[in-house]
Image 1 (cartoon, rainbow, N blue to C red):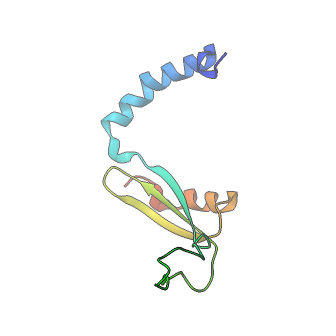
Image 2 (cartoon, rainbow, N blue to C red; image 1 turned 135 degrees about the vertical axis):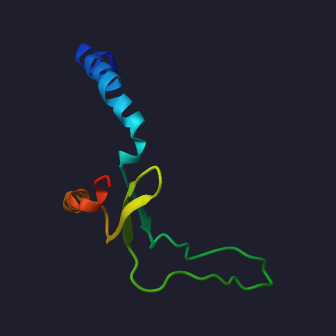
Length: 106
């Protein structure tokens, strides 16, 4: 049996649709969705292909290679509280990102 077919989950979803969704639809500017994405700078190709008579020229980032994570709150009108951290997201970074007062609705 799928989780959404359980009676307790059905009741919770019905409450959500009846009580929470109308409030969210009435004031969509108060909603903040937390988004996280990461960029790996060490995934640059080191080799390539070209014609036999030409030399392959390409550029790659120089310096510290690794992962950077971008965390931001997304609103209807604009992104809010962007934050870039070195490395992957972990629990400590997540807790710091949601404890910032700039993520609260204006």
